[in-house]
Image (cartoon, rainbow, N blue to C red):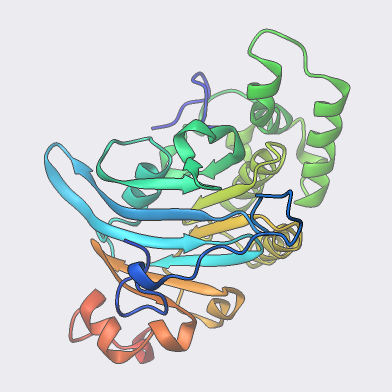
Amino acid sequence: MITFAKSPLSGKYPTSQSRYPYSNRPPVPYANDSHSHTPIEPMLDVRHLTAGYRGNCAIRDISFSLIPGQLTCLLGPNGAGKSTLIKAMLGLISASEGQILLDNKPLKQQLARVAYVPQRNNIDWDYPITVSKVVMMGRIRQTGWFRSPSRYSRELVKNALKRVEMSDYQDCPIGELSGGQQQRVFLARALVQQADVFCFDEPFNGIDQKTEGIIFEVFKELKTEKKILLVISHDFSDNLANYEQLLLINQALIAAGKQDEVLTDCNLEKAYGKRFSLVTVL
């Protein structure tokens, strides 16, 4: 359970069924400038990640890559290890094996570049705090706990609330909002972190259609800003068309790629069992 009294985190490549087997993955291109050794595009690489709880393996040998300007959806049945995967990537639980690299450097050394929005049921909504203060918590890493926010931080909060259409609620207690409004507030908190990598754990659960549209619009803007976006979802509706890449897992990575490459009958049977069909959920 995440409580507002505590500081929040504000901060093998694809398998043989994917487009790029680990050993044959194309290298990241470099700029033509002979004096530059900086990749044209930064990339987040998850390599052979294995993790679990109390000695029980929840995910094993998972590898994939995320690139800027791309929206990636992480799919799989309940208990497949989707939340575990993100938590292991961010160091919230220990990984027994594997590497997570951002720009070829360990992600755990660059967590200031990451914004994480957990599931709503992991948040203490009864804590007495207003909307604007929740969003300002995204600036704790820059401001500290005991200093007043800078004018720049206050402007960021104001703009983020406007971006998710929550400006009129800035003085409302967070617990009095609807589920969709609460989700928008935490999206705003992620935005003020000015991160390069955004991870969302089931942001579309229990929200209204307006909030869904706002979230996808913000995702579109973040893509334009060349951010890296990873979203856990159970949604098999037409919304899947919003994602450039799908990752299908059930403890291990089953498939990675575009929708028509991933959501095949064979892959879905491996993930969900023989009785699963897209017809039953569309």
